[in-house]
Image (cartoon, rainbow, N blue to C red; front, side, top):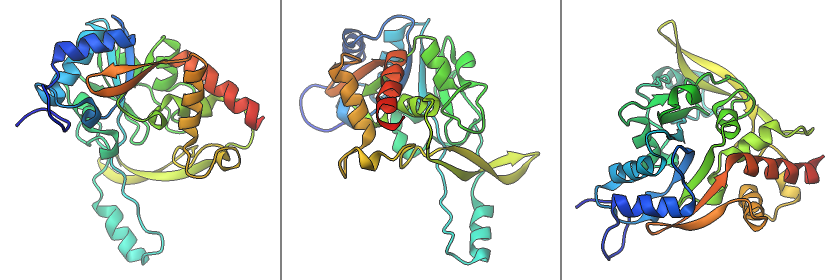
Length: 277
């Protein structure tokens, strides 16, 4: 039993998906930052491998596929006894770009891109990128340790190079490029936080502290302008679509969206500036 997704009917094929991607606006030579729900795509002959191959077909040998490649994090309960905290911290495998799996919430396709032949992965454990294709080396590194969605990061390089954000059946609120917009918006009052991740330093496990915008709860006080229970990124991306920034179409069985990264970031920065300046 192969493929992904649920439901009856004939499964989609690699060539069908590539055709759908081109109809959506994916072009030869494109650099795509991808968020995907394979369940939304539906059954595919060849499963996740066929989906990756379809994406590679759509961008051609001159193109590049990229995914967010955060490692699985391990929350340490600060209320637990200190000895218990130390014991758990000592047991967490450190981040290894070559081995550490992509966080499960990023989806099956992200992990498959990370492990694809020739793929490269950056060295940031939380905001890192994995990529395969013509410009993978240029895209993934360097990656600043702090404020890892902002200036000098793969997200800025992808935007400046004319890259695109593809939501392959994934919800609008998964667009990582909006974290880049939050990071570079010249606005006061951004919400930042410090967090620790396990890395190797001279062969030893070290819990290193990083600082960044709050990419989980929001870099701004969205609660005062967005209704309770509504994700601010859904609102921003939805407004962008209404303004003509981005396209929607079907790829397989998935309602998908494609955004020019530069246009999306410019729209988001203006949206944030209007409300938080």
